[in-house]
Length: 237
Image 1 (tube, rainbow, N blue to C red):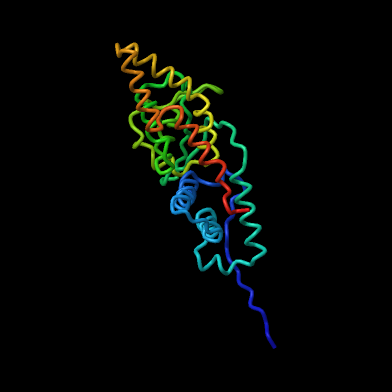
Image 2 (cartoon, rainbow, N blue to C red; image 1 turned 90 degrees about the vertical axis):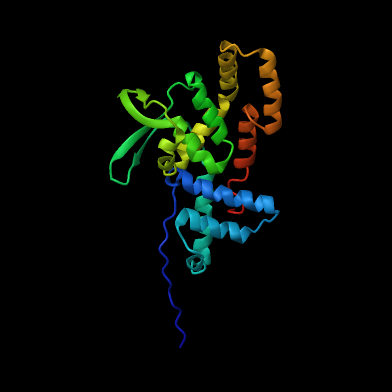
C-alpha cells in the first residue's frame, strides 16, 4: 500500500512591503538587472530567487514546496511589490545590541547642503548603492516636539549605510519618489548655490551638457522610475 509522505517546509512570507528590507529589495532588482543585461528571461529562475531573497528558502527547499503553496507565496510577494508607497519620514531600527533608534528623513530637503545633494545624486542612480543614498536622507533623530524633529548633522554616508540595509523597503521607495518630485527644485537650488559662489553661468551650462550625456541630475530620477517600478513584479505573476 502506497502512503504519500507529507513534507513540511517552514517559510516566512512578507505580508506587506514594510516586511521587506531595503537589502532584500536591492538584491532582487540586481537579479532582474542582470537578467535584462544578459538578454535572458527565465521565469522559473526569477521565481526561485524571489523565494530565496524574500522568504529565505534555499533551492532544495523551494522544490519541496507544494505547487499550490508556490503560487500563493509568489502572489503575496507580487502584491507586496506593487503596494503604494506614501512618504514615511520616521522609522525605528533595532541595532545588534538590541537598542532601538529612531531615524528621520531630512526635515528640509530644499535647504540641504550641497555636499548632501551631491552624495545623494551619486548614490541614488544604482540599486547597489541605494542604502548609501538612504544614509544621506535619513539620520538618527536628536530632538523632537510632536511632528517636528531634528536629525544628526551629516558627516558621511558610510556612518549609517549598513543600518540602512535593514530599513523597510516601503520607507526607502516612498522617500525616493518624493525626492524625485523635488528633483527639479533641488537642481535649481544647486544652480543658485554655485552662482552664489561666483561660478560663471557659461560654466554651469557647459556642466549641464556633460551631465545630460552621463544621465546625471533630474533625468537620473526619471530613468530610475522608468526602469525600477514597471519591472518590480517581473515573472512573479
